[in-house]
Length: 162
Length: 179
Image 1 (cartoon, chains in turn purple, cyan):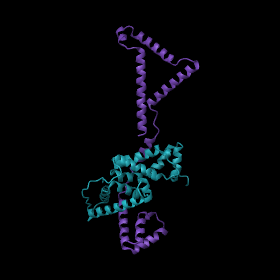
Image 2: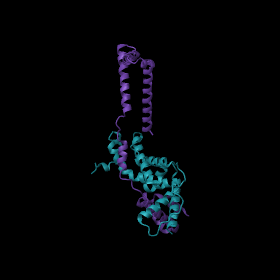
Image 3: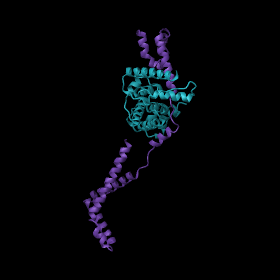
Image 4: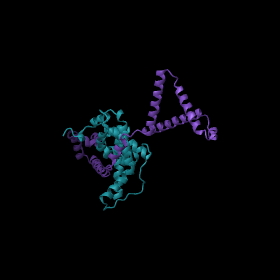
């Protein structure tokens, strides 16, 4: 194998991107060298075989992609998060403006709720005895809601970035 | 017509998508779907997985478009994503495992065109994974050896050796099947 053969072997894979001027010396070499001519024929035959296996995309691929990337409507969880965040922001803003301790809102809501439930449960005193502290139940419920929303949000984020 | 959307450059389309014109992304999908699917088909070895891989590749490209510099060529970036998606689906990394069993492929002398294509496809599936990826990018995506090397993070000489080996093996197997 001489220098021209080595140059030919190195350039053969990219032959299709060469211009006429760059192809000319390679074509001359192929005409003169039997070994490189054989290599050239094999490359042509392999090119033809690969061309036969080229598959075309299914007709619905573009639709499927566009459907997948279409903006999704805001999920129920994210709307509830927005409502909770809005309520908290309003509470803090009012508390700061009126210089009231924000926890007083919570206490007021808890006391009001407890009185309503007491009124409902008055005919069935046993039910009231069974209930735990209303304040503790309210805190527990609030923590559960926050935990559930956190889980939904985390899951949603994981799916988005998978 | 110079302003026909199908004649827009990749850069122009990407810039429009980044400005919020998402429907224009369809032009990118339609422009490259055959190339991406053909490569995914060669790597995964079946149509269903290839469709999933191609779809995932376009979705990932869309999601990461903000991190892409539109002045750079889009196709190699997309093809790298497509190869990674195909690898994820087949559960393989770059390696030397063939997809198809090594049972003998015998193509009848009077094989119809679809039969002949199926036989060639099976022979391609017998190539080791790395050779399939190189061939897919070189033959189907029509990348140069240098571009294939960049996409697969190999040296250019390794790509040329892989192409040479793939050609030899494919032709030998083909002759064995037909002769």
